[in-house]
Length: 482
Ligand code: AMP
Ligand code: ZN
Image (cartoon, rainbow, N blue to C red; front, side, top):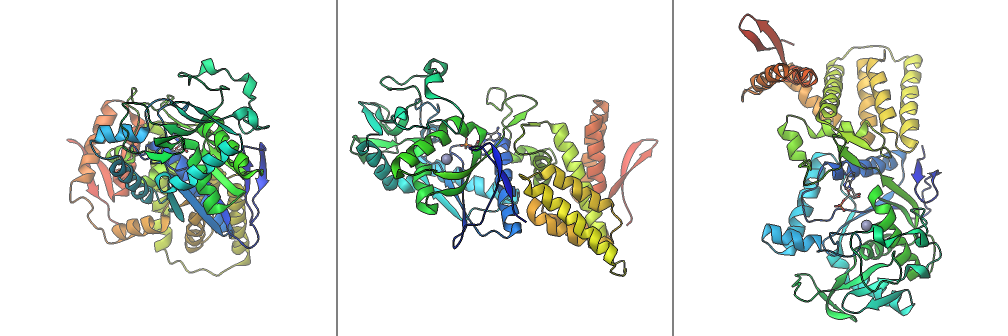
């Protein structure tokens, strides 16, 4: 099968073609390593992972490069404000490097829990200072950049013919007033920093000498240009990021890369993941709704329950996260596991029939057609549920779903085996009173008339191998006999 992906640049779905004699190059913008990755970030990186897994399943050979931003990303995208890393270091009371390594490690270790395949290559902005400097110098020499004394080297966006094409805007239509903070001395509102100078009294930990000043540092958009060209060459086959990157970060990557190399396009296919909101609102510190994976686990959900939730919506649609929607996803995931555990256990002997082989093949093709049509994971999950209900033999259902899980990444083999074993051996999973604790929570949920949550908790209790029995003295949990 071959994948069609929606390309933000052409606004069309395009066929992804394996380049001859080299791997397909994928560059994904990584995190700014100054704080814990949150659920919005995870929604995005599960999308990236779905893309990678689909390409692998389809038989493409890949090279996936991801950067870690550990310098230069200012709190305002308009080249003002503090460096996020320096801010993180002050908050943590450690060095900027320690902060960057801490949150980078957290990111990849938490990604493992979400079953996200690690990139083939991880590049850090601080390890690409010389390459970035070389590009900045070349941009100035070629007349694409000018110095604002005391501030930094700025890219002159009027010098590139198609500036902003990715985002579909025209420079003359942009009002700088719309931006919160202005930079004095910019020739055009859309001009942006290529290289910044430390401000007096700023006392940054991360500075390097450059032709423009002894204490200076790269602008944010330069790192991805330096790293992607170095690791993958031009054109980069696929470049991913969140939709927030379209008007600024990626637009400015394109301007610099194409001005530097003198060739277009910098990237063949741009893939952008839409945002996640929480209870209909933007995630923000002031609303206290910036949740991490740990918050999800604390509430009794599992990483795969969260992953299932992400896969239920299409990556180009906005996703509104609510705890109820997570509970529904977790219930669906647990149900899938239980069915699979049962199918995996049942050694029902049956003749292989052409009819069932054809049926299995039909399901597989239907699933792959959905996924290869711009990663339609919700349609893919619907096919999985059809397979579960089908009259294929248990073993056939089991094998087919596990095979397709190479794409979904729901860890179904391991999780269903664990569950199957627990059920078979009647292992008491309640050593720490987990079932009783969930029952108490369910009683509370019912008292609060939160029936969705109560139903979900019943499912969790049952997944642990218990049933709820109503007695005159209230509900009790009792271990189920298999
Ligand atoms: P950052 O660390 O802020 O550079 O973000 C890392 C990635 O997560 C970027 O590709 C962002 O576009 C993406 N991202 C950030 N917040 C959200 C959100 N609420 N929903 C979806 N993606 C997000
Ligand atoms: Zn980037």
